[in-house]
Length: 256
Image (tube, rainbow, N blue to C red; front, side, top):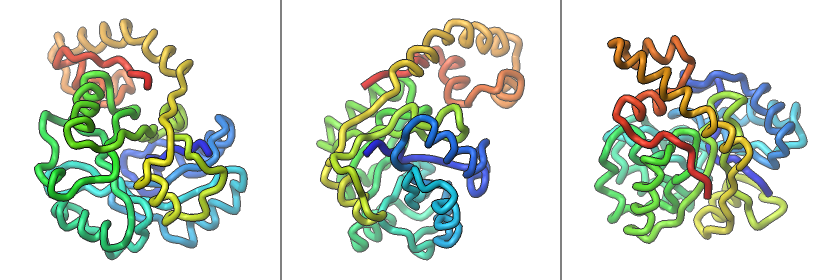
């Protein structure tokens, strides 16, 4: 079962660029078996998710959440769909206690995307996995994320962190089951590491082939004194790439 564990839409994520319907159409086109809707600090209402599922029976839709904790880090949570369990800017330790009490699973999303630090609670309150591949984990962060997994003895995971149709499914996981009945079963599979990492090698190669031109364009605008917001508007690029180029980092997309 090929599933994208980290997906945003324009309905509930301010940074989402594509509608839920467009994202599900794309999921069918690229043969995803399932997606998890992980909006920022919002759990999809059950009735809305059911209505979307009825429109797109060929792809299994699960509800999750991406929680921003007090340090600004992001955690993906699976198997806990009660909105009352979450508050934006809650301490990571408190979040993990609630995850464990519910028998759910948690993944540290895109570590090192925004800076050099990760939550200092990871050893006392370990996550089930650490995201090492996504649209927002370029090589400079990927290398450090892999090292973090090794240091903590935590499994790696891959997902698209897709915010638009063009980024959906770039990375994903292949579960070792053909059918995962619900969010709690999905959480158990993640906790058990019952999956393998997946990457769309052709799409990654195509994106990396375009990088020299992208780096040249961004570098020219940086030299001209343009801000990240101005570069984003001018080129339509994500901030992760823009910040990486500005800092002289390796902004290629890694493959598993």
